[in-house]
Image (cartoon, rainbow, N blue to C red):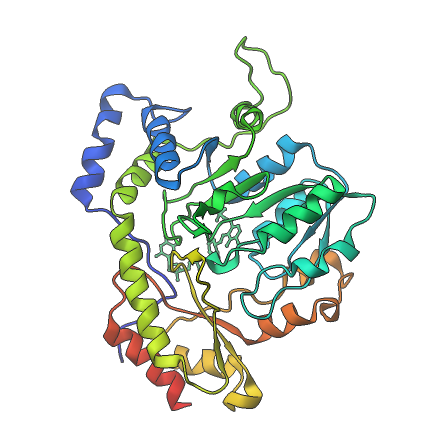
Length: 367
Ligand code: T4K
């Protein structure tokens, strides 16, 4: 049996590099609460992403909840059901009602042309997702938000380092959340950040992520604990030194996949946009059973039999989460429903060899 291939594999610095980075922590014993590594990583990330007001958090999910909290949002948020459940969970956990909007057929992001009819007097935000690093129709979304006075918060968990029209993904909307989870293009083991358009929210999150503690030692509001620790920040500093090489390796892998699968009838690939610089975070395919002759699940099973761990990111739709008790029939978002039934993310990570990619594609083509 061939060696097992998983959907992704964490990029790692050398053990020596990481050991060197964390060595000073044994001298200072300052290992959390906005220490030296935390401050350095914030600065380095601002430089790399050409961003301001970037606030490190314990993970991406908590960063998203924190953004909703510091904006003081209430009521309803228009969002996508085609995402990891974190997006929807954040909305629900912060006491808002998610209102699910359909997605676009070619890049799987929220369909901006379908947002406006979903807005009511209770709507306070639009929370789209740059799914797989595909950038949403940001100009159309902003226009709608401006017209109705809504906040725009991007779930940019997949969009680290992605640029659109020469701008970093983090410069869009009122705020963006990035995930630095172990499975992401850039990681801090667990971690994430919020990037705000306005400085005052960066300051507010600083306080929120440390229990609401003010400079005078008083608790100004009931904050939480969303701080990134020094070992995580140190991992980020190491990984950031190698990010270009890591993305280049992913790019090579994606081009190899495309060469293999571009002309297979019934297999649809992610749309490529001229104005977007990708980070090659995921390699989704969408199986059309009528044209391909097999269902997505049959492709998944065939890969599994060959020790290849593809994943059904993102199936089922988050609107089908049990807590909603069927309140959002999938037929209300028909494109999202169709894509979720056909999508499969193939293995993709730094160092994935061309031979392995050919083997994966060989299994698919043999069907
Ligand atoms: N919004 C979106 C759109 C997201 O995709 C996510 C996270 C978030 C928000 C929330 O951000 P965070 O709070 O996580 O920062 C994974 C990740 O846990 C999750 O971060 C990610 N999205 C989601 C898409 O995938 P699982 O349950 O599929 O991961 P798991 O443990 O099955 O790992 C997948 C593969 O990754 C493994 O087969 C091997 C590899 N792996 C995994 C781990 C944990 C490694 O190589 N190293 C590791 O340490 O959720």
